[in-house]
Image (tube, rainbow over all chains, first blue to last red; front, side, top):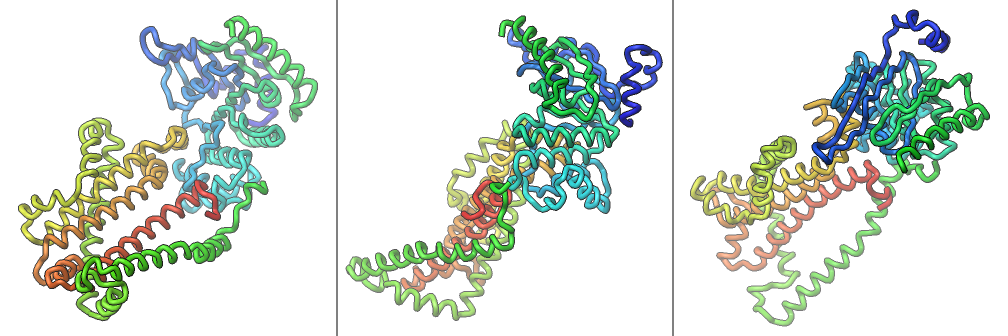
Length: 270
Length: 276
């Protein structure tokens, strides 16, 4: 979906829901709960969470640690099953990026991307060119033969991003992907993720505890409470792109989200 | 970035070779000291010369042995036995290790048995092996395989057990399932520990083989062990010690192959500094 189409969908969403109804959500969670353990020791990680993500939308999930963000992504990625409720991520397997790049140390940079292509059923003849293209996309051209340990943290995350893109998934799940990256690198990576998202027909579900990051990137910010994880509030981000993380609009929104987050944390006595 | 900058592979391997030559002197010094101690013991007349000869006659005898076709024939048979036995042990050990690591009931059933077998001196198997296979090649092969396979299996099991969960999660997210996950993620991730198991397995195979060749002497099948046994029977102390040196050197050479493989893996994974 192009940026214009996306804005159209966003624009009419509130006014005439009947018109938009023909586009089913890319990711849909309906009354999803997930408990871990049994009996009195059971911990409810997610409590009746409902969330619809439109195709092409960039949704940021924000919450304090322990709010079940990772549990939620695992459910959407199909790595876990809900205790109750329904999760629908459409057809095909979503791609997932972690805070740790989780690259395979026995493979080169190109090897890591090629394995993702191979597991995705890309024929051998195409893999080399596709790998080169993907690495070019994340500005790592010429790094093909490097080993993961030879790269900086930011570069490793770029490889992880290229590997996620190699899956050619319609839904990209990102679990605090830039949490361990320095601020300057993170800023550059924000630009790149935004470019990639705009250039490709991809829906992004981005988990972060960094409220500014969420305001910088998201079309919508979903605030989760802690223990159990529930949707506390939703913020539509109307700030036009391209955005800067230091812009007053982003700061203002981040301030509002943070205030609401404080309220939630206070309510839980933490 | 400068911190991450790697040494280009071609240059660094050459550098390493040169560094290796420089690092050789402690080894040479140790050998020198060992030979000196040996010579001093001989000079002390603790045992007569015909029982414990000094380094000079032993190395003369070694040179003499190296010129004999029968010596090389014996080495050939010994190494052939080692290769067949070890290959079989690796095959059985790998299959067993993979199965035990991935199949939970199987692990409960025989996991500790494999560890137990590993600690069992392989020479204990010989009486049974001789009953089962008579004094033949089969008996030697049986003990070599039983000596080495548990170590290979244990190496693979511990390698698989220590794979970081994130690595497996990463593989699953990419769509690797079942055999694909095993082939593309689990096996390569377990490789460093597996190589450790292969190395230990080789050491056990070599020990078992030497024990076997001393006990089970097959007619018309000369071997290092058989020559060693004959040297003892005919009180040829020089030949006996020369053959012991041969056994030691083969062991060291094989071990250095595994160590090199281990270092190369660790270097590629970034587990050791490129210069060390």
